[in-house]
Image (tube, rainbow, N blue to C red; front, side):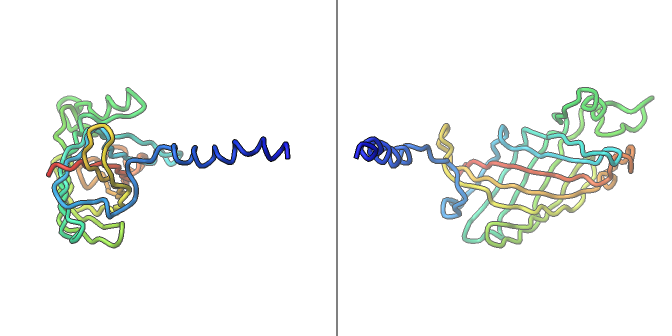
Amino acid sequence: MRKLLCALPLLFAVPLIAQSAPQMPGTMDVARVTAGTYNTDPGHTLIGWRVSHFGFNDYFGIFGDATGTLILDPANPNAAKVDITIPVGKVTTASAGLTGHLLRAGKDGGKADFFGPAPADAKFVSTSVAASGTTAKITGNLTLNGVTKPVVLDTKFSGAGNNPFNKKATIGFHATAVIKRSAFGISYAVPMISDEVTLDISVAFEKAS
């Protein structure tokens, strides 16, 4: 009896703790998505890139502060349109030396090894969307380093809800793609540094209208 009396407070505390547990603002519930125009949340939108370095290991970096729009109607997801601008000049890596090399001018006025100083923004504009459940293949044109090529993004819906700080309706997606940097005129050190670049994209869109 004594043990039972000692256990009673715990039995009552468990449901109270469960009730007070904070709920995530965003969940993978497509019913939360409403039609309209959405703008990127630049502070929480990242485009990661990964290359093989000498075949030993992978090296990766990030483009941030991406801006753009998503026009979406959940009743007709294949009609969605995406337009994203990526400030290449804000590329970030773990090495100050490498970041400097990515943005360094070419020697003696020649071609830069990578992006060069003050590079133009990259841009992705969708041309078609093929949705299936919570995933989609988004085909579009990627403009990078002055070259435009078609790219397919394998995209997955990751959550929707209201941002607890600004109260805006927000939806999120993850996407991946593989491009060849040589196709965009960036062929320095291929194949020692891989031609193939894996893109890992995490984007949040906030409803504008």
